[in-house]
Length: 214
Image (tube, rainbow, N blue to C red; front, top):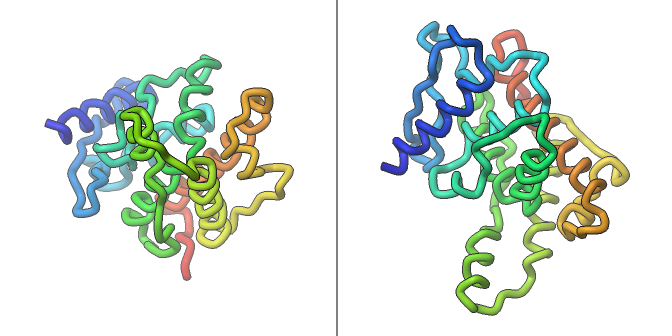
Protein backbone atom coordinates (compact mmCIF):
# COMPACT_ATOMS: atom_id res chain seq x y z
CA UNK A 1 0.00 0.00 0.00
CA UNK A 2 2.80 2.44 0.85
CA UNK A 3 4.53 1.93 -2.50
CA UNK A 4 1.23 2.36 -4.39
CA UNK A 5 0.64 5.60 -2.49
CA UNK A 6 4.14 6.75 -3.39
CA UNK A 7 3.57 5.97 -7.07
CA UNK A 8 0.35 7.95 -7.04
CA UNK A 9 2.05 10.90 -5.38
CA UNK A 10 4.91 10.93 -7.87
CA UNK A 11 2.51 10.63 -10.79
CA UNK A 12 0.52 13.63 -9.58
CA UNK A 13 3.62 15.77 -9.16
CA UNK A 14 5.04 14.82 -12.53
CA UNK A 15 1.76 15.31 -14.41
CA UNK A 16 1.76 18.87 -13.13
CA UNK A 17 5.15 19.53 -14.73
CA UNK A 18 4.84 17.51 -17.95
CA UNK A 19 2.98 18.29 -21.18
CA UNK A 20 -0.39 16.56 -21.55
CA UNK A 21 1.00 14.00 -23.99
CA UNK A 22 4.03 13.09 -21.87
CA UNK A 23 4.48 9.46 -20.93
CA UNK A 24 3.24 8.84 -17.40
CA UNK A 25 6.15 7.53 -15.29
CA UNK A 26 6.01 4.35 -13.32
CA UNK A 27 7.85 3.56 -10.14
CA UNK A 28 9.62 0.56 -8.72
CA UNK A 29 11.09 -0.18 -5.32
CA UNK A 30 14.84 -0.45 -4.92
CA UNK A 31 16.76 -2.52 -2.42
CA UNK A 32 17.76 0.70 -0.67
CA UNK A 33 14.20 1.57 0.31
CA UNK A 34 13.89 4.59 -1.99
CA UNK A 35 11.71 3.92 -5.02
CA UNK A 36 13.04 5.31 -8.29
CA UNK A 37 11.20 6.39 -11.39
CA UNK A 38 11.46 3.84 -14.16
CA UNK A 39 12.80 4.83 -17.54
CA UNK A 40 10.24 6.13 -19.98
CA UNK A 41 8.81 3.88 -22.67
CA UNK A 42 11.23 5.50 -25.12
CA UNK A 43 14.04 3.91 -23.11
CA UNK A 44 15.72 7.25 -22.53
CA UNK A 45 15.24 9.27 -19.38
CA UNK A 46 13.05 9.15 -16.27
CA UNK A 47 10.48 11.92 -16.29
CA UNK A 48 12.21 13.99 -13.61
CA UNK A 49 15.23 14.31 -15.93
CA UNK A 50 13.05 15.55 -18.81
CA UNK A 51 11.71 18.63 -17.06
CA UNK A 52 11.16 21.71 -19.18
CA UNK A 53 14.03 24.18 -19.04
CA UNK A 54 11.78 27.12 -18.18
CA UNK A 55 10.32 25.44 -15.08
CA UNK A 56 10.95 27.32 -11.85
CA UNK A 57 14.20 25.93 -10.33
CA UNK A 58 12.56 25.18 -6.98
CA UNK A 59 9.68 23.41 -8.76
CA UNK A 60 12.25 21.26 -10.57
CA UNK A 61 13.95 20.55 -7.26
CA UNK A 62 10.61 19.53 -5.76
CA UNK A 63 10.03 16.96 -8.50
CA UNK A 64 13.54 15.53 -8.09
CA UNK A 65 13.04 15.35 -4.33
CA UNK A 66 9.72 13.54 -4.61
CA UNK A 67 11.26 11.06 -7.04
CA UNK A 68 14.12 10.24 -4.67
CA UNK A 69 12.49 10.36 -1.25
CA UNK A 70 11.87 6.99 0.46
CA UNK A 71 8.30 5.99 1.17
CA UNK A 72 8.70 6.28 4.94
CA UNK A 73 9.80 9.92 4.66
CA UNK A 74 7.47 11.04 1.90
CA UNK A 75 4.85 12.33 4.35
CA UNK A 76 7.34 14.95 5.54
CA UNK A 77 7.70 16.40 2.05
CA UNK A 78 4.88 18.67 0.80
CA UNK A 79 3.52 16.94 -2.31
CA UNK A 80 1.40 19.82 -3.60
CA UNK A 81 3.68 22.59 -4.83
CA UNK A 82 2.89 25.80 -6.69
CA UNK A 83 6.05 27.78 -7.44
CA UNK A 84 4.05 31.01 -7.53
CA UNK A 85 2.80 30.44 -3.97
CA UNK A 86 5.03 31.92 -1.29
CA UNK A 87 3.45 29.65 1.32
CA UNK A 88 4.23 26.55 -0.78
CA UNK A 89 7.82 27.68 -1.18
CA UNK A 90 8.13 28.29 2.56
CA UNK A 91 6.57 24.93 3.40
CA UNK A 92 8.98 23.08 1.14
CA UNK A 93 12.07 24.90 2.38
CA UNK A 94 11.00 24.45 6.01
CA UNK A 95 10.72 20.69 5.41
CA UNK A 96 14.25 20.69 3.98
CA UNK A 97 15.87 22.90 6.60
CA UNK A 98 17.06 20.05 8.84
CA UNK A 99 19.05 18.57 5.96
CA UNK A 100 17.63 15.06 6.40
CA UNK A 101 15.49 14.89 3.26
CA UNK A 102 18.20 16.58 1.21
CA UNK A 103 20.88 14.14 2.33
CA UNK A 104 18.65 11.09 1.85
CA UNK A 105 17.51 12.22 -1.62
CA UNK A 106 21.11 13.06 -2.53
CA UNK A 107 22.20 9.49 -1.76
CA UNK A 108 19.18 7.99 -3.54
CA UNK A 109 19.94 10.01 -6.68
CA UNK A 110 23.54 8.82 -6.62
CA UNK A 111 22.40 5.20 -6.48
CA UNK A 112 20.61 5.80 -9.78
CA UNK A 113 23.60 7.63 -11.27
CA UNK A 114 25.92 6.34 -13.96
CA UNK A 115 28.75 7.23 -11.59
CA UNK A 116 27.64 6.29 -8.06
CA UNK A 117 30.28 7.77 -5.79
CA UNK A 118 30.45 10.57 -3.22
CA UNK A 119 27.74 9.32 -0.87
CA UNK A 120 26.92 11.00 2.42
CA UNK A 121 27.98 8.31 4.92
CA UNK A 122 25.49 9.02 7.69
CA UNK A 123 22.34 11.10 8.11
CA UNK A 124 20.83 12.19 11.41
CA UNK A 125 17.20 11.13 11.69
CA UNK A 126 15.95 14.48 12.92
CA UNK A 127 12.31 13.62 12.36
CA UNK A 128 12.53 10.60 14.64
CA UNK A 129 13.80 12.92 17.38
CA UNK A 130 10.96 15.34 16.75
CA UNK A 131 8.50 12.45 17.07
CA UNK A 132 10.10 11.53 20.40
CA UNK A 133 9.73 15.11 21.59
CA UNK A 134 6.05 15.11 20.66
CA UNK A 135 5.68 11.94 22.70
CA UNK A 136 7.07 13.77 25.71
CA UNK A 137 10.58 12.35 25.60
CA UNK A 138 13.41 14.85 26.22
CA UNK A 139 15.81 15.41 23.33
CA UNK A 140 19.06 17.33 23.06
CA UNK A 141 21.20 18.47 20.19
CA UNK A 142 18.48 19.02 17.61
CA UNK A 143 20.12 22.09 16.09
CA UNK A 144 23.48 20.31 16.07
CA UNK A 145 22.00 17.38 14.12
CA UNK A 146 20.38 19.72 11.62
CA UNK A 147 23.71 21.47 11.22
CA UNK A 148 25.60 18.22 10.67
CA UNK A 149 23.14 17.07 7.99
CA UNK A 150 23.44 20.39 6.18
CA UNK A 151 27.22 20.47 6.47
CA UNK A 152 27.49 17.02 4.97
CA UNK A 153 25.09 17.90 2.15
CA UNK A 154 27.02 21.06 1.21
CA UNK A 155 30.36 19.24 1.49
CA UNK A 156 29.03 16.43 -0.72
CA UNK A 157 27.95 18.94 -3.36
CA UNK A 158 31.49 20.29 -3.45
CA UNK A 159 33.11 16.85 -3.60
CA UNK A 160 30.73 15.16 -6.03
CA UNK A 161 29.56 17.94 -8.33
CA UNK A 162 32.17 20.66 -7.84
CA UNK A 163 29.52 23.02 -6.46
CA UNK A 164 30.85 25.30 -3.76
CA UNK A 165 29.42 28.25 -1.89
CA UNK A 166 30.84 31.05 0.18
CA UNK A 167 29.46 31.47 3.67
CA UNK A 168 27.64 34.57 2.43
CA UNK A 169 25.90 32.44 -0.20
CA UNK A 170 25.05 29.42 1.97
CA UNK A 171 25.59 29.64 5.72
CA UNK A 172 24.57 26.26 7.13
CA UNK A 173 24.62 27.59 10.69
CA UNK A 174 22.00 30.21 9.84
CA UNK A 175 19.87 27.61 8.08
CA UNK A 176 20.13 25.12 10.97
CA UNK A 177 19.03 27.73 13.49
CA UNK A 178 15.86 28.42 11.44
CA UNK A 179 15.48 31.77 13.22
CA UNK A 180 12.15 33.45 12.56
CA UNK A 181 13.73 36.90 12.33
CA UNK A 182 16.22 35.59 9.73
CA UNK A 183 13.68 33.57 7.76
CA UNK A 184 13.99 35.19 4.34
CA UNK A 185 17.80 35.01 4.43
CA UNK A 186 18.20 31.38 5.45
CA UNK A 187 15.44 30.27 3.09
CA UNK A 188 17.17 32.00 0.18
CA UNK A 189 20.40 30.22 1.10
CA UNK A 190 18.68 26.87 1.38
CA UNK A 191 16.92 27.36 -1.94
CA UNK A 192 20.27 28.19 -3.56
CA UNK A 193 21.86 24.95 -2.36
CA UNK A 194 18.79 22.82 -3.12
CA UNK A 195 18.32 24.05 -6.68
CA UNK A 196 22.05 23.76 -7.41
CA UNK A 197 21.88 20.09 -6.39
CA UNK A 198 18.75 19.27 -8.39
CA UNK A 199 20.14 21.03 -11.48
CA UNK A 200 23.32 18.94 -11.20
CA UNK A 201 21.31 15.71 -10.83
CA UNK A 202 19.11 16.48 -13.84
CA UNK A 203 22.07 17.61 -15.97
CA UNK A 204 24.09 14.50 -15.18
CA UNK A 205 21.17 12.19 -16.01
CA UNK A 206 20.87 13.57 -19.53
CA UNK A 207 22.92 11.76 -22.20
CA UNK A 208 24.56 14.96 -23.39
CA UNK A 209 26.01 15.57 -19.94
CA UNK A 210 29.25 14.02 -18.83
CA UNK A 211 28.83 12.20 -15.53
CA UNK A 212 31.11 13.27 -12.71
CA UNK A 213 33.84 10.73 -12.23
CA UNK A 214 35.98 9.90 -9.27
